[in-house]
Length: 554
Image (tube, rainbow, N blue to C red):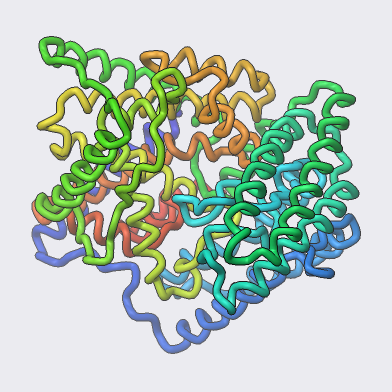
C-alpha cells in the first residue's frame, strides 16, 4: 500500500497545482472529448467497426437454435483471439483524444475478457448455472451479474399476452431449452462441486418459474403450454443429473486463485487494486462502517426506534412517500439533473413476515430511503437507454462495468446521507452503515473463496456474524445468492467496496482541481456523461490524469 500512499500524495500536489493555475489564468481544464482531427476521426470509425466485428465474433455459433459451446467450437474461437489482439494493437492511438483512447481500452479489456473465459473461467465446462433456461426479471445493472449462456429466454423482455411479433421468437427460445440442456450435459465435464451446488439451486428456482409461466400462458396462449411443460421436464431431468453428479463429486474449492484474480482485475476490469489490496480495503470499510454505526446509535440514543411497517398497505404507503421525497431531494438540492423520464417503482407485491426478513427486506421495512439511493441503478438504466454512443453506450461484456455501477450505487448511499437526505430521519442513517458493513463483509467472502481459504459455509457464516443486528439470515436467499454470483464472477462482491473508494477519490480530486467552481450537480452530470465504464477510465477522461492507467499498463 506504500506505493498507493505515495501516489495519493502526488495526486494531491498535482490537483492543487492545476487548481492554482486555473485560478490564475481563468482557464478551465480542457475536456477529454475535445473535437478530433479528421484523420483521428477516420481511425476512430475503424475502431467502431472493429468493435462491432469483435462483438459478433464473441457470440457462439448457433446450431438448431442452441448456442454451440462444444469443445471443438470453443477451441476454434480461442484460436482466433490472438488475431483480434494483433489487429487492435495495430491502431496508432498516440494522437487520439482521451475519449477515443478510453474506448480503445474498453475493447482491449473485452478481448482480454474473452481470453480469460477460455483460459480460466471456462463456464461452459465448469459452471452449471451458465446454462440458464429462463430469467424471470430484469437486472438493475447494465447486464446479468455473471456468466450466462448466449440468447437465454428473459421473460422481462416480453409483454404478456405476447404480441404477434414476439410470439415466434418466444416459442423458438422456449422450444430450444431441452436441446440446450442436452448440450450442457455433454459440455460440463469438470468436477466443480461448489459451482454445482449453485447450479442445483438455480434449476430448482427455474422449475418454479416455468410452472408459473404455464399458468400465465394458459388463457392467452394455450398452444404454448405444452412447450413450457417440455421445457420444465427438461429442467427437472437436468436437475436430477446435477444432483447425481454432485453426490458423487469430491469436495472442491472452485475459486480461481489469487494470481488469476489479480490478472483479471488488472487486464479485464481495469482495477488498480490487487487481491491483497482489496482485502485491506474491505476490512477497513467493515471497521469504519461498524464504528460509524455505533457513533450514530449513540447520537440517536434518546430517539425512539424505527417501527417496521406492519402491513403491505403501510409498506406501500411508505414506499410512495420515500420515492417522492428522494426524487424531490435530487431535483431541489440539486444533486444531479433529473430528466422528466426518470421514475422509480412504487409497487409492493407482497408482505414478508418478520421471521423471514433478510437484510434488504429488514432495511426496507424500517425505512425505504437508504436503498432508494442504491436504486439509482434504475435511473441510470433509463439514462443509458438513451445513450447513442456505439461503444460505451452498450453494456460492456464480462461485467467490466461493475466498479462503476455497483461502486457508484454503494457510494451514493453514504453520499446522500452526508448531503442531508436523511437529516429528518436520523435513525435511518444507522441503516446506511448496516448496509455498508454487509457489503464489506460479503466482499471478504468473495476474496476468500477465490483465494481458496474459505468454504462456502465459512464465507456465509462470516457475513452473518459481521453484519450488525443479525439481519442476514444464515440460510436466506441473500447471502447464498450473492456468494453464488461472486464465485462465478470473481470480484463482483468487492466491486461495491473498491468502486466506492474510487468514486470518493475521484470526487475529492475533481473538487481540488475545480476549486471554488466545483458543484456536486456539475460533477455528477459530467460523471454520468462518460457512461457506465470502469472507474479508472472515467478518472482519466474527467480529470485528465492517467496515473491509474499507467499502473495498469505496466
